[in-house]
Length: 509
Ligand code: NAD
Image 1 (tube, rainbow, N blue to C red):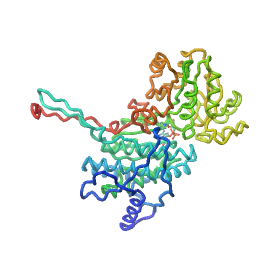
Image 2: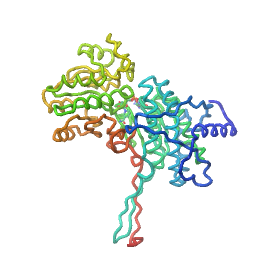
Image 3: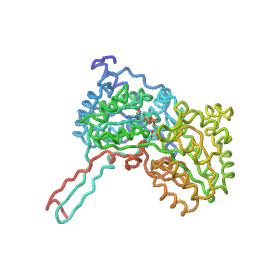
Image 4: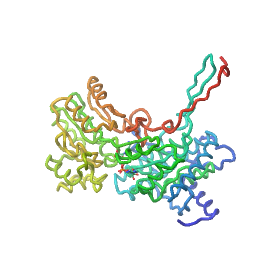
């Protein structure tokens, strides 16, 4: 890393603020003495939150390399944890208004720089659909979750008053996936900092540059706004060893892990408390009462978004036999491309790998997040340029059903009865307890499947992401802690409950 002097750093901050700046709106100024607030503007999105109507364009900010140890750039875990510890102490000494300002600063960058940062993420990871990358950052930028979620409940009675306040853990060790590298760093940072914490992030090596670049932008702007550096520290050369060093560091109070089964197991065996947003393989059930055209449109919208990279995206569909062919026709009408059962088999042979030692089959990395035409080409099919999803009939035990494929091809299974559909859905979900979806007009069926699946998200008659705030009610997030039960993570998830009790006094009524 290049060494920079103080003047160069100042210049860098000014540059960042220029990139971020475009109007502070009606927000209050930060606490006096905390430095100038970077003005931030927002752009509007469609109601789904994933699909922007306007995205700021322009080249990615060409920043000079920050020196190691500044603006969250670290190769050494011990140094990163030390810096994050210092930053966290400074954070909790500041006002809640400044904490709010920090979160708005991160969210503002996500919105204003969505297009160039999304492009950088795509150019580095080479997975997913370029046009969807910016909308993921905008979804993070528009997430309303903040310090308001920490409002303490109070108990007031004859014996006085007790408050239950939400305190920080300190430094949180964070693992992020390659499927949404910067969106997860940004989303985790907002939630964790809102809770009074700092972060040391070990990103997936395949998305390390965008994680580091995003963290640098956030830290520079935060430093400009409140004068605290290194709230978000990133290990710029992440390995399994650096992950282990974070997991075992005595000054890391909590782990926040987002990824597949391997990292969840490693975190849960670390000896630390871990909040684990683990894998999913979300099944969809379509019964005979469903609006088949709506079901097809919703399933395509969810399954093709970012080429099926989302953990909550539709991964397999079970349809009651009586409406199976009508549903397949609805899928084709809605724009997905049907391939034959033999072609589904042939594609699975190259795109899915068997699981070792009894593990489930899993995606061949070479095909994760590729465009549908790449998959079609593998089986000698040509598809229209606007086709975003392949689909085809398979049996219930097919590799595409059992694997979390994370690519835009959907296996569709015909089952004799609704109950058989749910049984197959349960088997395919592998007890991850992540997400399940139903298309039905029968409340009894909705209730039956909801109870049987026992998943964290359960979506009825909409695309999967509607269960994560995008087109449905409620908030969203990039870490859905299905493995450890916290659900869609918020600032509250990353806090410790602390009691403050005044005995026999302070009650004024
Ligand atoms: P991955 O499991 O290959 O990697 C995830 C992260 O874990 C990476 O940073 C990786 O370097 C790290 N890692 C892997 N094994 C580790 C170990 N033994 N010790 C320490 N770190 C380890 O997954 P990916 O391909 O990056 O992401 C896709 C997976 O993540 C899918 O299974 C998806 O369902 C899941 N995911 C879940 C959520 C959620 O909110 N539940 C969100 C996004 C992704």
